[in-house]
Image 1 (cartoon, protein in one colour):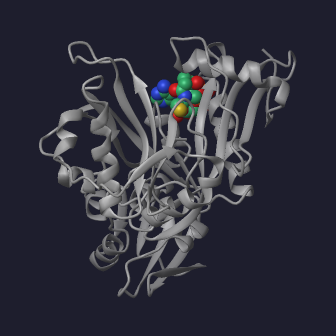
Image 2 (cartoon, protein in one colour):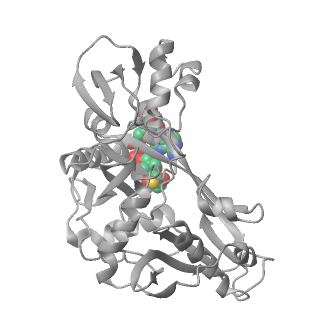
Length: 382
Ligand SMILES: CC(C)(COP(=O)(O)OP(=O)(O)OC[C@H]1O[C@@H](n2cnc3c(N)ncnc32)[C@H](O)[C@@H]1OP(=O)(O)O)[C@@H](O)C(=O)NCCC(=O)NCCS
C-alpha cells in the first residue's frame, strides 16, 4: 500500500465511498444517498486515497448546519459516514481523515462539530467529548390517546414551499433548548407532513415505518424522525394524532426529550428501543465560546487554559460572552472535556473530582452556572 493522501471527494468516487460506508455499517448492500433538497448547504466530502493505486481507502462527510446553545445558533457541522476500509484500519488513516475534515469544516465557518460515534476513544482523540444521549422509546400507540387533542389542526404532506416556515419553527424550538440542529429538508424514506391551524403552518413532522419487534403485534411500527410544534397544543396535538395509526401500528418509536412536553404527558413509562451517546467537538474554541448564549442576569469572568489551544478569557454579561486571548488561568481543561462541559453534559464539579479539570471553587462554580441548561439532545436527523 502506498502513501495516503487526504483530499476532497470527487463526484465519480460516489460509488466507492458508498461501498465503504455500506461495508462499515450495514448488513445490507448500501443504498444511494438521498439527493440534497433545495437550499441545503453543500456537504464537505473528503476521502483518503492510496497515492500509488488511486484506491479510495476512507471517506467522511461533514454537513454545514447550525446548532442551538443557550438560546443562540452556533455555526456547526454534522459529521457522518466516517468509514475506513478494513484493510487500511489501525494505520492512522481515520485520524488523518477526521482531522482534515474538521479543518475543512472550520474553514467553511463551523465552530462546532456534532456526531454520533460508534467508538468514543477514536473521536475523543480528535478532540470531541460526549455531549448527551439520544434515547428512542417505543410508545404504545394507544397511550398517545391520553394526550390532549387539538381539533383545530389539519394535516397535509409538506412541500418545498413549507421549508422556510418549518425552519422558523425549528429555530424557535432551538432557542428554548440545547443541541437542536437546523431544519433539514431531506427526510430520506420518511414522509414529511405539516399541521395547519386557520391556514397557518403550526407544526411539522417526518414519519417513517419499520417492521414490528417480535412479539409486539400490529403490521408496522411508526418511526418519528422529527416533530416540532409552534405551541404546546400543536406539538401535543401532532403526537396525539399519531394514535390514528392504531391498530396497524401498536408502537410509535420516537426520541423522547428528557423534561420535554411529550414526557410530561405520557401516561406511563416507555421502553427504550435505541440508545446512543452523541459527541461534540469545538472546532474553533474562542468562536464557539463567543457564539453561544449564556444565562441572563449573570456577569462573570473565567480564564480558561485549554490544552493545545492556549489561554482564553471569557467575559459574560447579559447572556452574551466575549473571548479575548491571554489572562491568568482560573481553569485548566482539555478540549474534549471542554466540549462536554460546553454541552452541559459534564458537570464542572464532577470533572474536577475526576481530575479532568483543575480550578478553584469560584471558577468551577461560575462555569457550572454559565453552562447549565436543559439536557442537550441531538434531535434532528442528519
Ligand atoms: C473507527 C475508524 C474510523 C478508525 O479508523 P482507523 O484508520 O482505523 O483509526 P486510526 O488508525 O486513525 O486510529 C486513531 C486512534 O483511534 C483509536 N481507535 C481506532 N479505532 C478504534 C476503536 N474501534 N476503538 C477504540 N479506539 C480506536 C486508535 O487506537 C488510535 O489511537 P492511538 O493512536 O492512541 O492508538 C475505523 O475503524 C472504521 O471505519 N470503523 C467502522 C466505521 C466506524 O466505526 N466509523 C466511525 C463512527 S461514525
